[in-house]
Length: 124
Image (tube, rainbow, N blue to C red; front, side, top):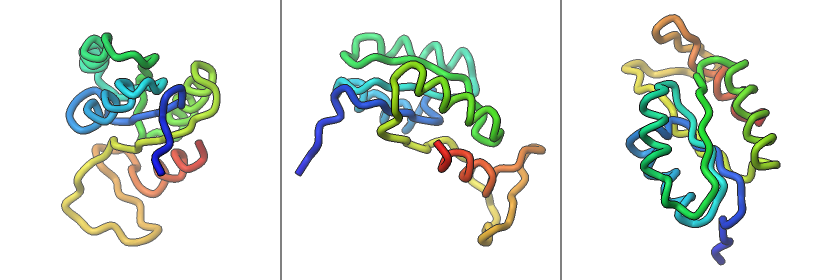
């Protein structure tokens, strides 16, 4: 059985382009309230402009998912704008060329990526 997402609150990370933007569009076209999140301010403005005709409410948040505080700020903003978060699409990511074992921290460009950022998102 399919449950409508109309009126639900959705957070999509990595939503300024590509798959994340496509996911955000599907939710927004289905009348969901969508918070699109990313790191590139111009790309976020472009993404918001591309979604302006969608019937759902859309907002943006600048967030770096490698930063726990940034994720917390994003979650607080989403709750303030839309109430409870019904759906989290954790699309932002990197594509490491190494295998990450359980509990191992991967460092990319000076930022810790796993498992800290995943834990912060899980706490949303």
